Image 1: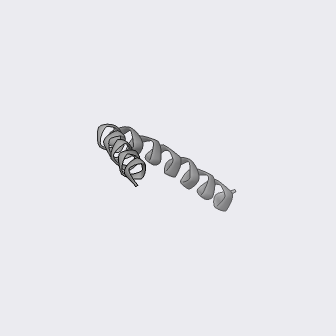
Image 2 (image 1 turned 90 degrees about the horizontal axis):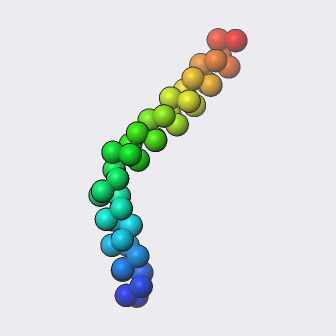
Image 3 (image 1 turned 90 degrees about the vertical axis):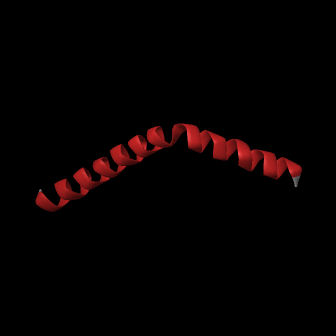
Length: 43
C-alpha cells in the first residue's frame, strides 16, 4: 500500500510540474485528429 501511495504522489508531482506540456501535447493531438476528420469529410 505504501508503494502505491508513493507512486501516486510521484505521478501527481510530475503532472503538477508538467501540466502545460501535457496540455500542449493534447492540443496537438486534438488538432491532428480534427484536421484528419475535416480532410476526410471535405475530400
